[in-house]
Image (cartoon, rainbow, N blue to C red):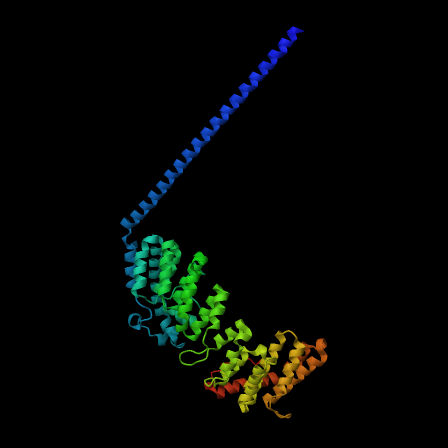
Length: 458
């Protein structure tokens, strides 16, 4: 029995020693693996560093090779080529007068010469732009010197001509890229292609110093695409500063640009805009934007513009009424404008403009809520228009049709069949009569500059 106890004790000792040995060996292996892993990571980092250094050296060698073998790619040389290009807007250098090109009859005779000159000009320009872009930040000094020098050439005159006919010229290999019209715009696009912090800094400076709307918007779009949070305040500040110096059409373009950037800044700018330019000409586009965006806040400005001594043309007065059409019937001041305008007309003016304004108010009711209430308001307003019951003029017919339409709408409510009513109206001679009247008026009053008036009924 004693021997058995001794055997058991020895077995336990042996097991314990074995377990301790195993734990020691395992711990030793783990320490060795950790050491090896750290060593491998260090070696990997060293190899990566060496690889990065080699890559940098390769790029430097490539640049050195380009400089040695291609001196024509030096940024200063490229910019000098840009300066030596002919200005396609200068007939002394192109031999083609702008008036000759604009004339539709002369375009076939000048088209081939112009295309050849334009293609050569564009190929040369884009050799310069691509070369500068590939040089990266090394090009910035030369680009900056050109942009601050005031130098600029028109690259492709025909683009301006063809755009007048609704066409745009684009690169065959890049349908999204429109050819820049000037060398400065081309360099602005080049800076956008380089896209380094230094390039963006130069682009920002260029935008801030420019007075050309196309340059400002082109630079602004690039900056916002790269980093909107960083450049949005600067872009908006430049746009706001340049706005008062622009013509009406340019102001409308810039307003759309600002609206896409910031709705709040767009509203603030609109609220402070003056409706008249330095020559006293009313901007209907700005008025329309104000009313559409600010609503009743801008309504008084529209009323004041309508009653302004300088607003004498029927076209402008009708344009103002068009901007406030949603308030016709519900706002007393607008109602006064509406009835006063129509009752102040006579003859051909009343037939055309009076009928058109009645249609204007009628069409607006199709896009409003509480139609029954507004229809009655509009019907009451029509009763204030001066005309005899048997008036056979176009205006008299328009007024009778409008009264009949709204009376039926009110009486029948939801049962009123709009499609059937309009079908009957189109089958009558009223539509043709309105169209003929519009054409005749424009022919007899070419000074009105009307173009066409929307003659679709209601």
